[in-house]
Length: 339
Image 1: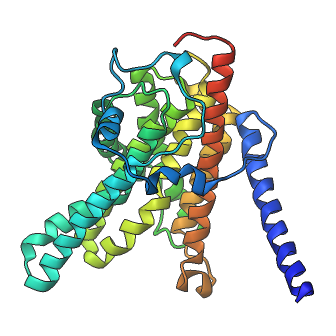
Image 2: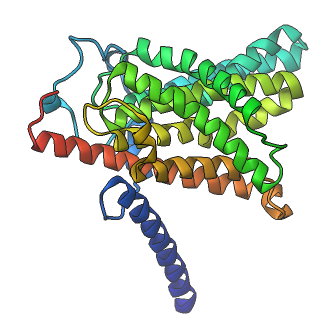
């Protein structure tokens, strides 16, 4: 028994070392050389607590001249988003009722609502989470909605243009998957860069929010389109998978742009060739390509192991960037930079 216990402890230690090595490597890309501790239960601890309506209302009135805090008032404490979970629960309940209407009463009129709510639920809730995480509170709900809608559609338009210019194949083999990943992430990059310049934002959390909104919009409209083409089964699969796809990948790219562009400077062509940007950009492309690639290992596909590994890898990158964002707050406050 003692031997078995020590073996289990050894395996746990190896897993911890692997995670530490991964976060340390990613954190070096942000300019720090320490491993990042990931505390899931601490970050989402507020999800399981009661909150009154005033607390939720306070979140959605930020981003105006009178509600944007000064840099000295910005919190550098660990982020603990929770409103997103209520939004997800609301959308999930709505989707469940529509599904009940469809299955029990065989009402085809429920199908458009199912497609809309099912496509929206996870990406939009994630966008709300990044809205909460933006501790600077300098982007309003209206601006975030603008990026979500216009940015999501514009990124799809840019994707279609790039597909006309770059051959991509069917996405099954590795080279085709890489081409698709490059095309779609580059298309979203162009729109994210535009909004970062348009809003003149300069902080990592700002870039993550704008990227997440563009990616969430992209995911919603893409899933709606695929559902119309392939049926409701596609909706049920893609709806939960959205937890680790476009919204996350685009948030990584948005943060990378901020890391690379320099304080109070616009996004330019030279921003895109700096290592701080290129590493995370290539990571997003690889995550996307890995998602589309049908690896020649049936076991991975049968149990969605490939998908789960990519979801985990994407979230590890997000946690590292959140840590970098909080470190940025502490650095700026220490330098007494005025917002």
